[in-house]
Every structure is written in C-alpha cells, then in structure tokens.
Image 1 (cartoon, rainbow, N blue to C red):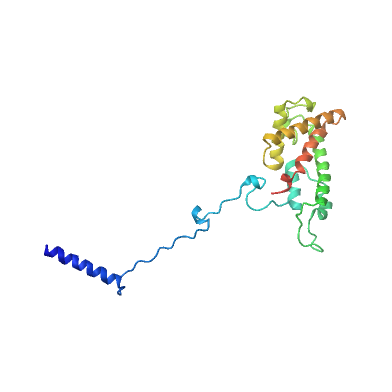
Image 2 (cartoon, rainbow, N blue to C red):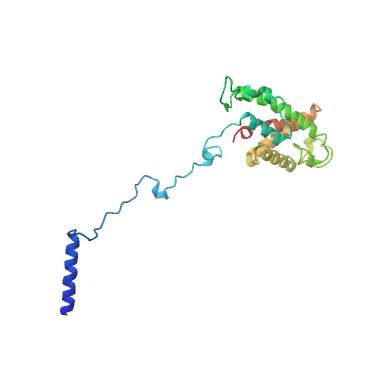
Length: 222
C-alpha cells in the first residue's frame, strides 16, 4: 500500500514539472489543420473541366494546324498533296521571316477560303481516281465499298453508308461519327449521291463527303 502511494506522488510531481515547461521536457503543440479552400477536401486535386462543356476537349483550347502540319495531314488523309499549298502558304499564315517572323494559326476567312479551294482540288482528284480502282483496299475514299467497279451510290444500304462515314470520319478526324450526327451525315450523303447521279458525275458524291470532312474544324485543329 505504501509503495503504491509513493508511486502516485512521484507521478503527480512529474506532471507538475511538465506543466511548468521545465527544460528537457516536451510540451504539446497545436495541430495545424489544412485550410478550407475547397482543394484539400478533394485530396489537393483540382477537378478537370467537364469535356461536354468544352466541345469534348479538356485542358488547353484547340489550336489550328500550321501550314506544314496541314500539308502533312492532307497527304496522310488523302494520299496526295495539295499542289498549290506552297503558293498559298503566306495567305494561310506561314511566316516569311522577312516581314513576318511568327506563323499565324488564326482560323480567319482568308484561311477558310483558300482551304476550301484546296479541298475541292484534292478531293475531286481523289474521288475520280477512286472510281477507277476495282480493288477496295487500293482506294482511299471508297475503301469500304465492295470490290469491283463502284456503281450507283444511291443503291448502298444504310449500313454501307454508315460504315463508309465511320471510316472516313476516323480517317480524317481520328474519331468516328456516331449517334445523331452520323444520321445527319448519312442524310447528306444520300442527297449528294442522288445529285451526282443526276448530273452523271458519280465521283462528286464522294468528293462532297471529302470536302466536308476536310473543311471541318476537327480536321484543322488539335
């Protein structure tokens, strides 16, 4: 009993010394809480913007292709160059490093006009060449159509039209058409095919698709 009483007195004495802040003893410190700024409650991570509110993009805004990038993209998508690209380069924004030392990537009306001219040139040439090819894998625009001579495009089934559009959108944009937009493009192609057959220029239905895909912002930006 006496031993227990002595131990209790020793314990009380130690506690009293600690409260006095004597040298060599540890004193409790306040724990700092993280600031309530809306970030730490989420682990310090800032949530990314909603892609649906930014045209499917997250992060920086879209950038227009430079003239050289545009030339490469046309060559890759169509298998042939735009012959007048270099002569139009200054108007499309290429720097000459004499008067202009920074390339412009602004999608202005001048750029849109010259690009439409270029799209017509390469798309009409490519569509005309495709209709002369009977092996599907050798074609560019009509690759999903059956082997043999490309016939009346009005006779394609809805499934064939959609397959063609998914292939071309992926080829030009790296992303396939789907949903309501795919349906709208299918309606556009149906009208283009009917018009092309009326004027006896079947290749123009494929050329119209090509021009549409090539002048779309998804082909021009990254």
